[in-house]
Image (cartoon, rainbow, N blue to C red; front, side, top):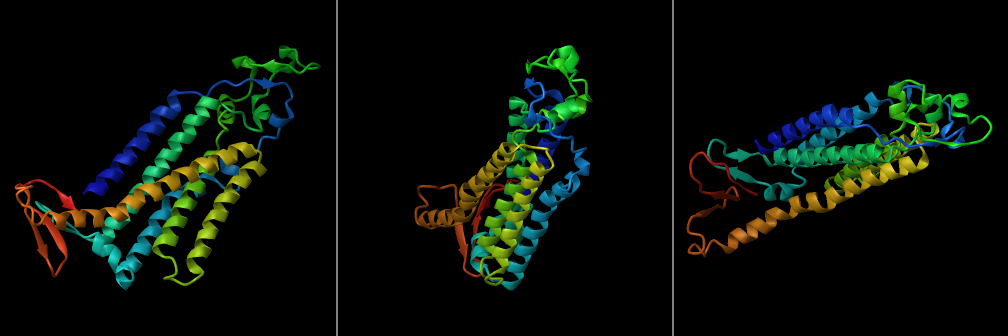
Length: 310
């Protein structure tokens, strides 16, 4: 099916991206000033020692939308509280497949858009980190420059030599990728996307405060993730704010333009189909028929082809 192919394609692109792009290119080598107080914060330790560990963050970012969207769509489908949405999403496919459940279609639609936005957010953030090479607040703690060899014990100097750092190369490279903050970007992207989804699809159907409470909880957790990065001296404030801006921008763009098109296109196509029913001479190769019982539109095609009408 189409949506399974999209998910597989996105997963493949992400795998290739992480294996090739992040390992091939190195961040830009930014210089620093000896004993810069803004870069001399204590080393907070590896990412696994953070209060918001990567395994927890990525599990929530990857698993929460799947569980929440699937549960909401299943409940709405079973309770028939949003029948008009599913009436617009009925699909007939001719050839080897015939009918696709509208609940399944909507679920993969929202999850596909979410996965695409998450992939784009990650690309934007990693590209910006490589281009800017911004230094983390604990950069000098892991860089461990030899101030005697650099002759900057008494007089502050700007150091730009690549060999100035004597610390572990992996930690030094990671400390050069601080702007923008990836954790803040993907967490706020997930929170904004899920907030708009919950408020649009659930709204007041589950109670006056259920949807707002869930939405505010997601946004609060995303903001606290950014605050924690600053509190642990892993990122500057500007890094967190820029990451949150990237994540929120991608989420708003998708829910305004992409998801909005998903909701409106069935009506537009249905109206266009109604207008062409009585004008068969304009499109002689298409035969539109209407079934009053099932409210479906079928397009006759040659055997073996897959066309869908929404």
